[in-house]
Image (cartoon, rainbow, N blue to C red; front, side, top):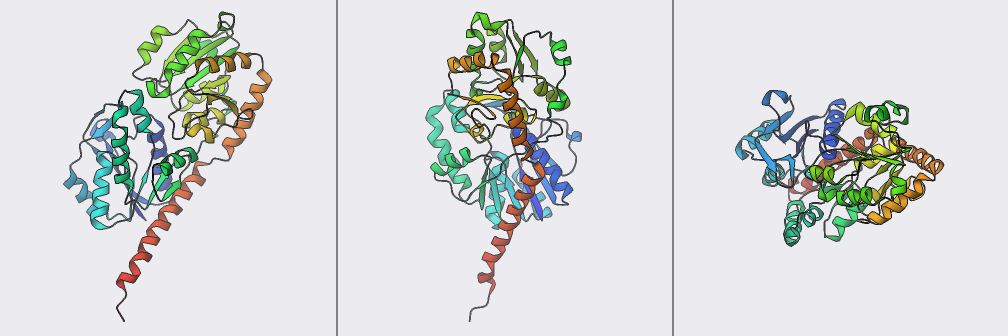
Length: 386
């Protein structure tokens, strides 16, 4: 099988989509599957090794750390013609994905898409709600010819089905339980950041409106004075709301910037509660990373995170955009360290069942089935008329 991938985000960018696709390409290499990957250029040309094909790009207005490609259609089509892919995987509906879509439709090749981001919900946070109907019209046109549209959670599948999408399939997400593990808990984290409070609360993610970061800021500010000394907040990440959040944060908040790899894994394992107010997730990779680290989760009953958190067992669910609800739950957690430990243990057990290898092998089987079905559909056209 020869596979062509199209994405608007890849390493060295750090986000759930780029990390998932990086793991996928590593798995394809292990399985001996030839592939090309077309991605916006966000680093010097010589930093990209085969099979990555970097494309000239500019920052994307909703996500400045992500890039919007300015592709040369004829150059990409020449690459594809020489490579002769059996299937094209479109991991973006934007410019690079459009190149792949046009090529697949022109030659009648099998092609699939994966849905990674609820941009319709993002638009509401950026006061662009009026164009949401236009967004869905475009998305339905883009996905119309795809042999499958992959979604990362049942919540996202349901959302797309309600919009009239067809040929939907679940492509969930995995976790590396050797990287994210409670064994990496260390007092060095508290020493490094001067943390003395009994309860360490952790947020990992983009610091931006669509992550409901305002809910987090208000919860920090309005936590009762008697409880402020009992908790310390660790905010891991960057984004357009960071400077505003810094200005409004109380004294018991530490901002670390982006972290990844072993350092991030140690932060997860060394915290006591993961607090994640985002209601716009299609899956919630950071929630699964926290659970694998033995960290109980406080999140919302909206978005893809609902697939991961069982209330009272692996975490705590609160209404979205409700700082008061988050404050109540945090205050309750201070008094229940044993319950937190039990939820952290159960979350770790759930993570054990989400192997990347199993998930990617399932995706490859879907690829193979789609290619085979296309070949089978061609047989009647090739048979002689009797």
